Image (cartoon, rainbow, N blue to C red):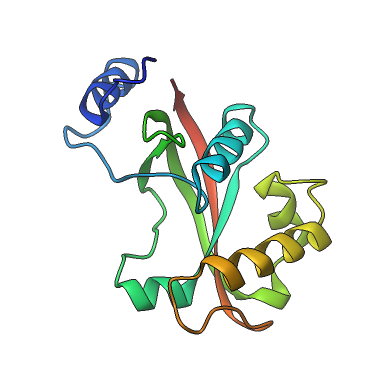
Length: 153
């Protein structure tokens, strides 16, 4: 996939490989808050290690962005904004930060995949990058999402 590949071109490739996809491309977005985050987390997706992600419910409420739903398709961008993967949301659950499961932490695929690592990384992330002025709290609502890789570029 070239650096010039557009979302429309990527979507056409996806539809060629998976003809049952809808005509209109879904939302395109990148993981993390920086190009380096996006590239690192995308690499985990493409390797099959990352099958989950999490977001702050407070961020969704603050920005007005729609909450993910089961069945949603997601075009994942790399740090340069190039479409690199098509994911499907397979499960969505909102739980307090301090009740996120070890299984979900493992599915996120980061670090040693432990719950302790997940908590440390995500607390730091929400303290530094949250869209909501609420930032982080140990009992904050977290949107835990499971994802399935449908098409890698």
